[in-house]
Image (cartoon, rainbow, N blue to C red; front, side, top):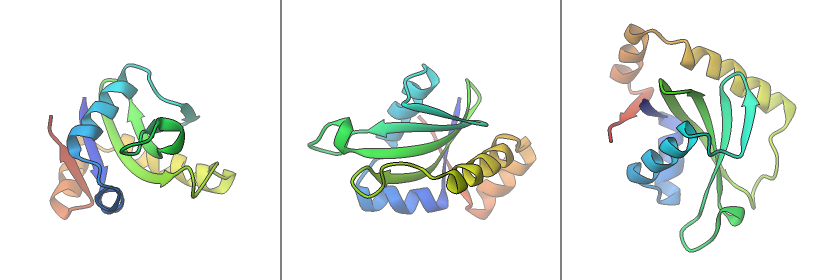
Length: 122
């Protein structure tokens, strides 16, 4: 499975102190079915523990995912800052997920070259 992070997501994780190794671990868990919510249309929510705290007080990651193929880390928020995802935001995530998960290899390469996404290599 190929793992990517969006440019916006990369800024978020830098501030929170997450490493690519932690993202690779989380991606493997999602690929095994270990996630908190399937929001539909390839959008998933995964809880990841904050350093020194459990998952319940940690971060929520929004992923665009297709089993055994590709996973994009798209967004992140602390549970203390946002409890639920509203319907308008959920619709937007689904729209973007369909686009990202539908990229051809040429489109992926163009996004990588332009810096819109980065591939995380295990």
